[in-house]
Amino acid sequence: MAIRAMCWCRCAASSDRLAAVKTGRNLVVAATLSRIAAAIVGGFVATAAIVIAIPALVAGNKVQWVMGASLVGFALWTAAAIWSFAAATATRAWVGLALVTVVGAAITFVAGVSR
Amino acid sequence: MSGGSVRQALSSLHVWGGLVFGWLLMVIFVAGTISVFAGTVTEWMTGAPVKAERALTPEESLRALDHAIARMDQTGPIAPEFNFYLPIGYAGWKAKGGEWKEVYYDLATGKPRSDGPATGRTTAGGGHFVALHFSLHAGMAGILLVGFVTLMMLVALVSGVIIHKRIFKDFFTLRLGKGQRSWLDGHNVASVLTLPFQLMIAYTGLTIFFTVWMPASIWYHYGMPGGLEAELEGKSPFVSASQSENQPPGEPAGAAVPLAAVMPLAREAVSQSGLAVEQIVLTPDAAGKLRLWIIMHGDHDHATLLPAPETVFQGVGSPVRLRREDRTPGTATKTADVMYSLHAAHFGGAAAQWLWFLSGIAGCAMIATGLVLFTVKRKQRSGHEFGVATSRVYRVIEALNVATIAGTMLASAAYFWGNRLLPLTMANRANAEVICFLLVWALTLIHALLRPPRRAWPEQFGLAAILCLGLPLLNLATVGDWFGAYARRGEWGNFGLETVAFAIGLCFAFLAGRTGRMRA
Image: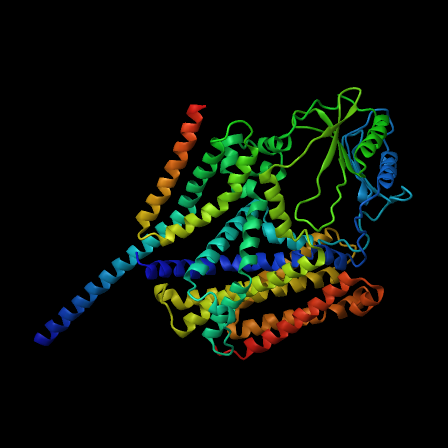
């Protein structure tokens, strides 16, 4: 009887550990998916905010500035994708990209208002 | 986060991103590498020398224009909408019924040629590899996918550099016959050696279609009423703004342009610029007003990265008179032009083309060794990434490796065979060739899924080797030519294609032998 109880205890303990491992793994998967979304979606939006803001600062003919900013945009998006994985946590990755987006949008807004 | 764990996070990004996007990237790279010599491929496939597009002298261009006007069967006093491209003797015009008519004519005599711009077999030629390279034959969806994959290549390159601790030392490290270590060394050598090229080719590739792949700024500042398609076709507010950047577009050419006025205008354009007429077009603009464009041939010696300066005239007003269009490209336009020249090796002649071709092969090797490294590593020690399904997922990954590495090569070789074997009179022959490629490629995937990898690799490489090595024989049997005959006639493009195919066939035979002795 004692042996059976011990056995049961051990089983319960190992299934607890298994559950903990599973939860841990699920968290890792969720964080990774979040980083992937940050790299692709967040990176695209942050890049868009910057490439829109640069020509907004220029008065008159914007063609060359729109084109130049767009050409640089690929480097920005790449950097954003790398940042999404290099940041300490997925949340911090999103915060960084959101900051860049807000700064870009603010520049565009202020430039539009002041003109 | 410490430096070590950043490196680890970027390492997973490199490994998994490289795997997922490596398959399509492999196809894009194989197609792009062949595309360097797309013109040569077309020449070999037509089975007859392509009428080289040669710059005309100003006098020749005026004579060609005279022939083009004479070829139009509409001889009323008012010119219909037309498009003449003089270097290849092309005349197209809108006939009375409204349908578009076109004719190719002999530049010397002006007599129509029934055989179109080139003689020989109808073929998709090198254009197939170019289209596969930038659109995977899938239209706008394919273009978007290729752009995304290319951006991911850039991410894989940058993360690869960061996780790489000994970038200088690995330049000199190649340990052969050491299993997993050798694959890693091979991957490192192929990547590090050609890293500047890989970064350049990925970035300049992205900039070519920046209107499609980075449209945010255009969308915000100019609007995109026609969507991405209009940007791609160059019919959007942004594109017209960039074309009329230095000078307003001017008044249109009047409601009707007398046919008799075209020749004197062209003569005046030649005497003003000293250049030959390359193209002359009468077409309605976005507002429906007729515009007459006279585009002069620039002097491009292929020694510089910048394209030839464009000299363009417009016929404006009524009665129509000549106006010189001032088109000095801005800094960003020049930058984009240089990046395009870099990507397509439109400079430096044959030396640059060969360098690009060899670097492209190194790029293929980089991707292929990276893909193989993934499975080799996990055969030593499974990562259990997919729980109970892990071994099945590994199996599919290996099959995709086989189909994208060996399969793409096999399908490309089959494409050349299709060109020689399909009946000459077949309808939609060019399409059938492309279907040949796609069909064989699909079969390689099915084959790779059905056969164990240690059989699938040598079988596909072996068949690809047979097709490549047999190409001169096939050519001799169907067209009566082979590389010896090409050499005797001095057709070095065709000679090069067959000898390179033969050399690549030897490589495939070697790979078939090596993979055949692989441990399971």
